[in-house]
Image (cartoon, rainbow, N blue to C red; front, side, top):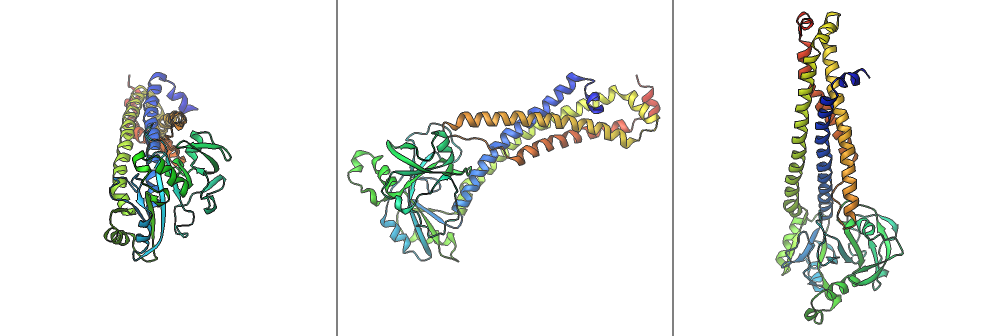
Length: 392
């Protein structure tokens, strides 16, 4: 309480200093949460592309195998014949909406269709069902779907409800647990249903000449034990015409470096804000020491040690940082929650506020305050007691 009374001696100055820290921590929490979301998407991508080769049409121009260019199912047999291939899982991926309605981190909402079990148990990117069930091979030929958590929230759907995909009704049989990555934005349907939806979305001049059962847009290729995915990707592109491949290393090269730069920019902006707040703490503590010089002289004269003087002023500065950090965290959490809730209906989730980010922000503000107050505190401890008592 004594430290709070000392800070309350100059309420306006202390409030402005705390406000400076609050703004810095608010920026750190908001931009840090944005970086967390980007990081979660990238980590999910790394997990998805690890230990496999994703194949798409060479002319697609898609990123990471999420393309809309069709391939023939005959390509599956060609790739299965490549030396080192253990399993091939064909799939159809397409945009849920013809035009994106909002800015998304990662892929936009997708409809995906694949054959359950075609990976032969080699897929390491696992998702968990929160309610209902996963799709099975017996669902082929039926209009059923398993929704990602964000899609289910956006359309307010639960198991047993009906959702319209590309103009056709699908019964929701399952909803996934949140992954904070691409599966949250997908509606999984049986492969035959996805093929039909894809063909129906083509221009009429093409629809008549395309057989739905013969169309896929991507496939996941799993290497045999001991076969390097990079080597397998090279074999596929050299032996199978008209396809392009994506491996974990390719994903890192295309996405990882770019997101690393973006993360650095976001955190850098927040740190600049915090530096300004730290300077305001230095200024406040320096002025406080100047005003309390006689008090410091009295404490020294009656036996107060220099260590005690340093401890008192550093504790005051740390308290300023802690209060500012706590307020900044609360403000940042409010902003993150409000923005996520307001944008979730459009399928966009921009932030992920983690416990680590929250605790780190408050600790960082407290430590910043203590460090900023250290130099003025040392100066105060070095004051000559006699000179301090005579200070006017």
